[in-house]
Every structure is written in C-alpha cells, then in structure tokens.
Image (cartoon, rainbow, N blue to C red; front, side, top):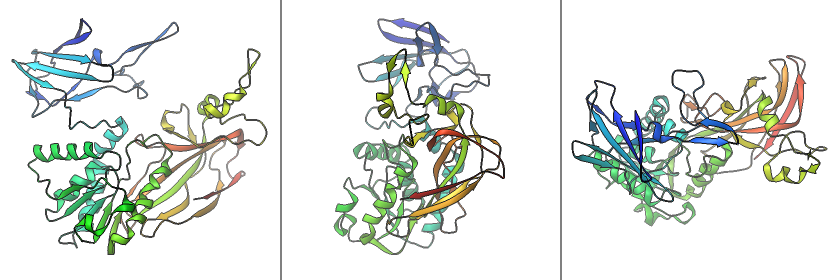
Amino acid sequence: MRLYLINGTEMLSIVMGSNEPSRRVIILGQGAWNIVSLFTVFVPLFPLLGTKDWCDHWKQCVWFIQGTGAPAKKDQALSLSASHNQTSISYQLNWNGEGSRSPKNNHLTLLPEKVAVYGDKGWRSASISVIRNSMSERSSPTCIVADDSVFLALIVSSLLPSSKVFTMFPSLRDRGFNYLQAVADANNLSMDRIKVIGRKSSSLTMNDLNHEKVNLIVGEPFYLGSEGMLPWQNLRFWNERTLLDPLLSEGAFIMPCKGILRFCAMSLPDLWKSRCGLKDVEGFDHSVVNDTLGACGDLPGEQQGPCLPYYVWQCGYTKKLSEVYSLIDFNFSEPIHSCFGETKIEFAHDGTCHGFAIWIDWVLDKENSIVISTGPESRYWKQGVQLLSRPVQVNRGNSVMHVDHVF
C-alpha cells in the first residue's frame, strides 16, 4: 500500500491482495491514522496486526462504498483520494473511470462502540426475537421507538408490514429520518409505516398517533450524545415511558422490561493512580484543580470522589474481587418512582480493593430469559466506576462491605 501527498490532498494507490471479485468496504490504510509526537516519543495510532497489542484505545476510520460495492481483482490498482475542510474529510474512490463519493445527507456518525453493538449478532438476534414474540399476538400494532434507535425502527416496521411505527429520535431528528429513508430505498421498503414525530414525549397527544393507542414501546436504550455518560443516564427511557403512559393501551408491551443495577468490587491499581488527587508539585499547590479534573483517589479527610464513566477493560490491570451483586431492579411496566437498594458484599478473592464497577443489565422480555449485560466484560458499553479515597486490603471470607443506593 502506497501513500502520496499532492497539494494537501491525500492520494492513495491501493493494490488489492485478494482474488475476491469485489469489496464492500475499504479500511483506510496508512492515510487513515496519524503519528502523534509527544515531546520526543512518537506514538503510532494504527492497529498492530498480528500481535497481542491491538491498539483498541485508538480508533481507525472505516469508509463504506455506496451502492453494491467496487469491483476489484487481484493486483488491480484502485485510486482513493481524500480531501478535507476545517471540520470533515471526504473520500472518493475511482475505478474504471467510475467513482464513489462519501455520503452526505444520509450519513450517521456513531461511536465505534455503537457500531460494534449493531454488528453484534447476539445482540441483534435477542432484540429481533423479543420484538417478534411480542408482536405475534398483535395483528396491527402501534409502536413508539422512544429513543434514537434506527435499528429498532427498521426491525419493527419490517417484521410486521401492518405495523405503524412512530419514532421519537430526540437527538437524531431529521438525520434519523434521512437515514431511514436511504435504508428503505436501498432495500425496497416503504416509509409509509414510519413517522418521525420530532416532539417531546410530554407534548404528544392522540392526534399525533392518529387516535390509536400504543401497544408497543421499544428502546435499546440509546440516546445520541449520552454514550460517554454514566450507565444510569439511559434510565431516561423509563421517564419517557412514564410520560407516554396516557397513550398506552392496556397490556402494552415495553422493551426493555426491566433494568437491573449491578456492581462488583474491583482491583484497579492503574486507574486509581491515574485519578489520584494532586498536591504539591515542584513546590506549587495543585490541589485547587482536583475538583475540576475529577480526582478520586488520595483525597484529604473524608472527601469522596465522583463516580465516573469508564470502559473498565481499558483501565490497565483489573481484577474482580467479589461476585456480581444486584442492587436495584427498575420495573419499566410501572411509572417511574424512587428506588432504594442495599446489600452486603463478601469478597471472593484476596487483594487490594480500589473501588466498584457499576452498570445496568437490560432485561428484554417478561420471562427474564433474555438479558443484555453492560458489565466489565463488555467492550461496547461504559461502566460507572466509584473509586475509594484509600485502597483497602481485603481477604477472602473475612472482609465484607455494606453498600446502599438511592434512585
């Protein structure tokens, strides 16, 4: 793979190394990442293929070719050009005198983790199975997609042609509609059954729903822009469901049916050190910035740091010191209300406890048989991490902690 720079526009000459007749996606090569200079240390931001040190912390660019893809053969050269303005980069692929440009109007920019969720076969199968089963007893369901999920809007409308789907798209709005329209056009689907409301749940009336009661409310839950927040921020879905309560029919099905707040004690030495409060540095008092930077460890007195969102798997060395405990169940079949939970932790391993990982598992069906876990083993979702002000040495069978939480 060769890289050329011409007048500020990147030109890549790509030689296909496969006998496959076509490719639907191009993973941009050496022109798709940068070299960052940190003082005198050069850090390459590219995947180290063939090694155990895959750079998961860095993100690469993936560009999908429009249409049915670009025909390509082994040893054939394809020309890919990239140009940029102050805010974005656009690409153009040329082959046999034809070209494919970056999509504009129907392009959705999602975080890599969200793209990975949509590409996860288990997650898709679970969602489709629950929706299909819930619709089996309803000949012509009226459904509200209460979040920004374009996936669920398409699934509901395609599983049952007689369904009527109203999408909230609180953050996507017109971008979500344009994307749905593009997908519908590409798959010969009708958009007649899908309507983007574009209004707050609190202001919806029966007039907006063509005077039909809602018997299906679904959500992932996913709200664009909240991916970096604490896990329980997605309980916004429960509030949206509550605001829609006057519009629901008797026995309306809600997916997910329940959220379970879960947690476990963790050894997180690398994260704890990186979040330690600052004191004197070279004779200067830096403690004033501890609140601004969100310092959690080694704080003065009984001061407790904030709970912060992290991908625990990215936090260096980690080890579970306890079993996973359930703290609170959030029942979405009921309107939102205050909840309280408490439990006692018994440590299952010896070690140093630096804090707790906290997350929400989403129960999709009424039988509690299909659960989407967003815990530390998952690379798609962030967990809340509550670090202790001081690490605590714990022993298996001899150390316990009491934890309570109010929502």
